[in-house]
Image (cartoon, rainbow, N blue to C red):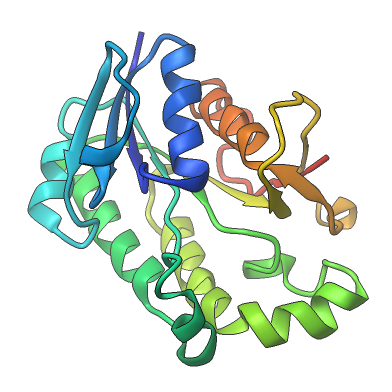
Length: 216
């Protein structure tokens, strides 16, 4: 049984990851500003209500953990503004996280970005690359690019997971992790399947130093 810190744990992939990790028998620290509202009254769950930019809180949460999963979103309320003006939330929180992991000696990091980040940009097919990405995602993914560069240079035992189009579908166990650039393609994947992969990869370490694209 391991202790897993999930950052961005109150919704989306992060909340699904908390559930999957608990189901797998791990102890989970669920870190998010809204962590207190997580309605999972299960043994083994510790809720940490704090901001991912708070270096003191992040460091304290990492102490004694075996690994960290970072799954942050821009936030539903902030999304329209972020589409227009961009953000630095991913790079700033990642800087805090990397420094805290070095300070505590915790080395295993699995981080979620997405299709279009880093060297996967331009691999999503015509509609995604020519329309959806430049209109809706580019300014967000510019900061995810910086986030990925920081993780790559961190010296940690990292895996960067890039899901395709996210859905609220069920856990299928059919998600494919495409690690070779020539195989990257547009596709959808459920948040439940992403979460299951994150928990499994954290401890199996099949993709350390790699950036698998996750689709069905």
